Image (cartoon, rainbow, N blue to C red; front, top):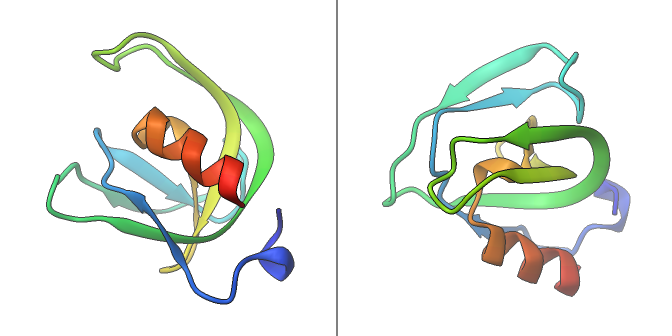
Length: 96
């Protein structure tokens, strides 16, 4: 999905679980625009998602996460799906 194909309204992808880089594009080589800190009280909205660079995250308490899905955040920038709850990511990707 690209931003052009995104739903008319942003959709919730929930809070992040660890420090997360927001980048200018869906790539690990894209410049970092900002850092998001974990906070269960802060939920993020996305306006689209695409496949991009694969990210391997080994620090999740539920085990290693590998994903090439990147969310375009409604606030601007891109963030890897490994930074969000994987059940929420699966639901969002299935719905959109």
